[in-house]
Image (cartoon, rainbow, N blue to C red):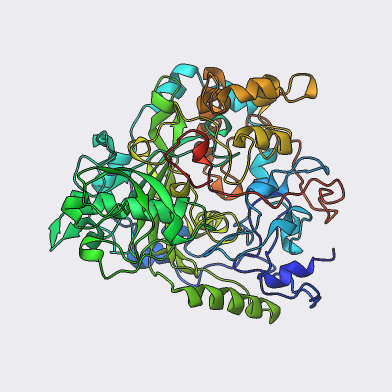
Length: 584
């Protein structure tokens, strides 16, 4: 296979994340450059680890037979799939007309300098990556799924598995790891603040299109926490300062990147300018409860007043916690008590503007010279990308208890958070937060309309269904096909019921039926028993039909059919439902 010259300019991962994906170009690369490509080199076979970490360090903290670090230590640095940053979605059969690629591959905005919309046009993979190693997608587990009763699946989904891990691991891990300081079962107040006083804050957001919709496998939630100086004033905790700094960060990440700082207007929860001593709405007065920001200040507030506010980037020390959960059809938002995964992101380093440009340029040069991209760290340290994020995750063991993911399982996280054009400083959820007070609180998609993406006129889900011709990247969600593609044609009138001004909201489109929710739970339960996550973790109700096992033809056929799009974006046009927002 002739690999596209774009592969020469891979900016971090050997493959990015979405169908028709490959390595994106550096924006500054001349259009006429036709340097010879370098294919990703991989060992001919898996090598055994040089020493036994388990023997050297033991299984780690535990309780009875529960040792959350054991499996990661057993596998150490072993990697069987060297292209694990590419998920199964990357191998979908586009057939020249189904394009889920646009959601991830697009022209990024600072600090994401990738211009990778062209990757919708070809499977620009390394020779090694031409073979799809996500074998779980092709295994028929229908008999095993059917053997699990609804009652057993519900009982399983309603068991908390976070508290046990917290009891074992809190205070037992190094400072760079997730400290397990959030009392997740204790929950959050109406403003989203963790009731345990840990500083974590939950927010409501519109799920990213496709695999993140509940109908495609999981419910989830996301929490954010800023460092101590962003939550204090004169060394003392300050709720007013914390709320204001979160509002500034939200406006920085979620607003139109093309709008100058001075012209930005963004709705916020009520902020007390008198307590802050800063006029944030630009009216020349200090008021007790403003509801919008007008312009962005040059620095954050409180004890972080010496910290520059860099548009579109998170300050060093920012933390995210993302729990991926089972579906409970009787719970609010279908968010079950049981976690499938727990994902932790920590911003280790905040790069100045010039460093972002130099990082991309250096990585392009390294790629041309055949220097392979690598991630620093291992399972116990987490993996660190060149843009300052440390990523660490937990997943269920064979008994459904949370365990540290192996190094290879961590690799599956890195493509999305490092190697695609759509992300905002490596993240997905926070730039899609519901603006203002309505967006602070524990995750719920109830009442959220299908607003368009920024710069678009049509509702986001409607646009996705049009472009993909299905409700997921693999076209495996038969329920969505039956509901919205009767007789093979999209029922746009039905989908528009959840658009702004319609009589329904987002759950009408992206929440599964009770039957499908339980079936997806059962499919995950089967995977948990197998512990085969290195071969795929997506719950499949039947073997995949529209997925390549191997790539035989580089072209996706989308360019020839005129079905590529450069307008995909993470940010949303909330002005369609909230007059206070002027970001459109």
